[in-house]
Image 1: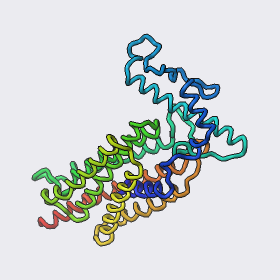
Image 2: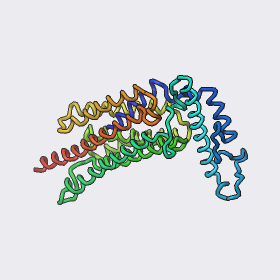
Image 3: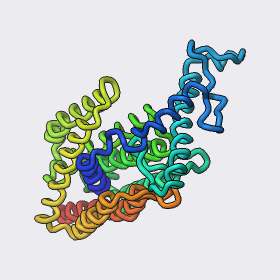
Image 4: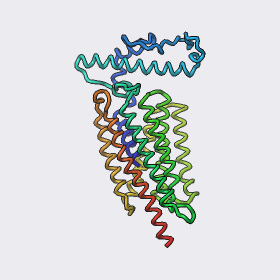
Length: 342
């Protein structure tokens, strides 16, 4: 739920402000000239990169066989492009600051200072903390299910959604993992993995929101609900990876999926008598406040901390609350079954 709320407002804001399109920085002729020269010469001003010196025919001047491997050359070329963009950006920002101009975005992103080679170190750190928080939440949920709620008679719990939350935990941790990787190094394949992981999480989260809110427990009914949604999610991921990385279409799909499940959870929280429904409202309210960080988009302070990084920071406590709700829901479901048995 928490992940869904954050992603919803993020993609909506992308829709409103068009951050997927070319930015003012990479449209700057001086930046473009620097970048074009760097790709040809391997130098951005006085800064040169030896790994950029790859002949146009794709062969390496080095005699070592591993330098001639296509994968190695591709990685060198990808790193060369990234390094050229970064150092040309630094030069332009230095010139702009000299003339009293503020920072602008390059390729949809604010200019960040690299730390230990990480492009957005603070966002990487917060993504890693979100990953750790999901792991902690899932582990405590696993311990609760296995050692506190399991019946000694049949070694099963009365909670019907255990397997679904295990899958959700895996998809959440996977999504935050690739978020950290993408923020550390923005490349074509890290971008695709980040987007694909987010879509997979959204698609499955819609399924679990329907199954839990409507108390769908019959296996046949679950398959009927999940099959078309899974088919659409997989098809969309294949489309992004193998046909076209269409940011606009992906944004619309994510908005529809995320808003749908948010409405489902909100409706269920409003009509249910769940003892921990206040935690749902806390996550919704916290997500709304976190949205303000994306609206008030500001350049990174000291080239390190921007609004998006702070948005990642707010998801950490919300994730803790969300997993706390999931554990309470497991206790609630188990206690209800025990009462019916008695």
